[in-house]
Length: 433
Image 1 (tube, rainbow, N blue to C red):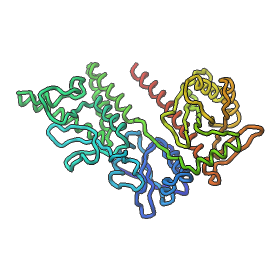
Image 2 (cartoon, rainbow, N blue to C red; image 1 turned 180 degrees about the vertical axis):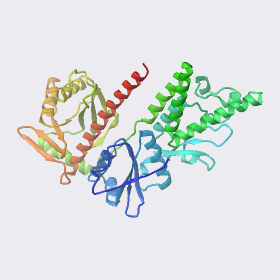
Image 3 (cartoon, rainbow, N blue to C red; image 1 turned 90 degrees about the vertical axis):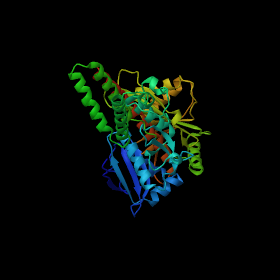
Image 4 (cartoon, rainbow, N blue to C red; image 1 turned 45 degrees about the vertical axis):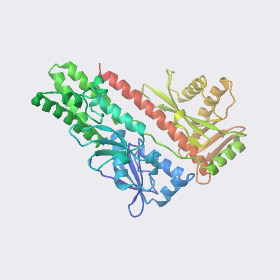
């Protein structure tokens, strides 16, 4: 993987693309301070800068940075692998969140006749091992290995034994080293050893960022088998390609640390004054993704006690036949309140007066009394309609309001991701017909 970064000034991020990739905050001596990945570089970097006004750690990253380097990738998996390589090489000062409470998480490929693959901690690595990482969490690492195993079988049993391993029974370790070792014919044994080594080499390519190379190889195999009328094998490689696609678009975890006692108190005081709101335990934000195509999707993001809670996020597919954002927002919120979820103290909708009106109708028709406000773009501003309409610009004079724009950005990202997922799912169905 040849790495070619583009440099951008921290004072002007308008030219940063809205694409998948890796970004680096660097100081005036070109030392890497923080390395991250995102499905939307511009939005993510903007979020860092906004969060720097309300969070101490983010403030240190921004204040010590001179420029931003970015590398665009074609998919999320490539961004994840590149990010891990850069963190391993440069050990950026502010990437301490990767320690996962114990130590860094890696994927280890052992150096032996039958290389084994499994997740390990930093302390379980020796110089002879082939290692990928650090990776963001055990959960993501397990997901990667589980998906790869369905594409290319491998063994994770540490010692060769006389019985087939558990995964061999599921065709997820094939050929199984335990079975190979029992073969008496040297020629046949060598052939199967070569197959196993080839599988490991293909996995190494995927984990080193050369996933497109393996994808192209599978595509060629599928075409060849189809041309030779071997449809069973052609279908098998199509299955592998679908899994490769799923792996390439692995869901990236993008976390925002927003909570500080001072900023949260300021937010509470602001809404106590403007909305007579006594409690601000839970805020929900809604966004509609409608690209004029077949699907209209919506997302609900949640902030509790000043911290974004991704476990509470929800996604919706519109059931309305007409693509009208105003009617859709009303329909989505009414559907939301049919569920036995924790009720919010405040609702935010992406938009202005009309979106607020429709959302308030949904709340009222659900026999609830919850205030609704809007957040509009260009420039970002909070819109409150009570006795009269009030507009509050989100600027450094009211930095605590940036938390709300970040929540809106999260809703926009989540809704678009779901929209993209449905389009991709539809495309795969068509490709199978």
